[in-house]
Length: 304
Image (cartoon, helix red, strand yellow):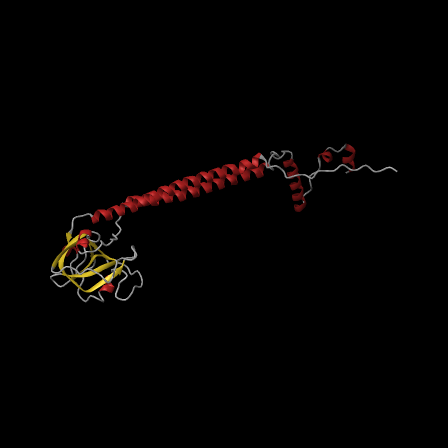
């Protein structure tokens, strides 16, 4: 008994390898976008650097104002008049301390410390709030010196409210709340005594939060300019990469599949003949004859 031969096994075709043409099509757009991202990142960093320069200049300007020579407070903060450019600068004034309505303010920067706020009554009856220093024990606050005192310190604006505190205390030197406790007319700010004066009062110096100064507007403009450039560079790189990819796809569709080469020129006449035949049938005109029919012999023509 003869056995039929075993048919040879056919290997299943594996995935087609990616052609070099396809790899080249996405390599250039990807490289352009990567360059755009790198350029935009550098420009963003330059913008952040200029912004930091702006902030540093503001801090430097505030420190410089705090080191200026003291000015008479009455000349810059008159009662009932506008306050001049004096916030964050040293001032000097005189009066008599009145500790009857003295207020403790918890120091939110240093836990366990309290700022001591005392009213300084001037000759005209107006009051200047003065932070004489800080203490750690609210029950043992040194009494202010008697008699007329010359006070020198940094003149600061009213502070924002910082939350709830025990009764009899204030969360900050907020002049609108202080006016509910002190009935006298107050200036539009308060004075934090200089460190030497706080030591003379038997206290530690009180921290000073200077008003933020303004840096150079030129650096702020440079920062915005670099960020605009970064957005432009990233957007243009994406647009150029998309245009290149679209152009390559269009070219690839015109030449056929990758590696197949351009379409054969002999295919175009065949398409035209089919188009002509279909048009002739639609309009009722006689269809064109094949080349063999046009070269018919004499006998065929006589029979027609």
